[in-house]
Image (cartoon, rainbow, N blue to C red; front, top):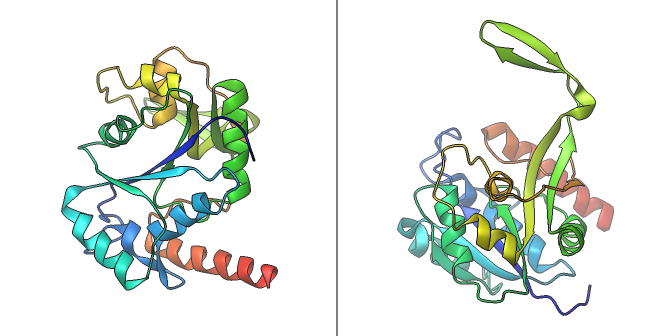
Length: 232
């Protein structure tokens, strides 16, 4: 992919590991011999888009991260910034160091290590054309919505499960993060939508799971091993 637009990727690593039941945040847990966070950064580094990488990480873990990089000889270039109280504040802190108004910026969960580089490139391309590109997959399950004490069926074909990366033109993120924080902001797309922009979905990948529970580690390891076998 070659164009005149600079690409950036903000990787948000603010997880505490509470639901994982571990003493260290889940982004540092090992999958196939490498911390989850490193897999995520490598996916962007290996993409054709070649974005400049910005890692938003809580200040308390900066030294630990640097130790991990040394241990694993992880020398992928990236800029480290201090994460904030919420995802909103972490993304804003990372975005604030980007001065290129012609750039396209992807925001990605550190704990989605299975993202495919091809999907990253597709998101950048679609964001360049449409203003933004939000990776999402159609629900495979029937969905019901609880209203009071009554549940109602929703049309499965109209339900999408949102993933990351969520990719935006600079101007959209600029306008979005001028807003004050709101508890209704669940992801970057909701922040941008609140600023008045239409959200565009890009077909995602059901293997692009978010590592949340212990069993997710085993699933991620199996997927990565299968990918390795297919590429060998």
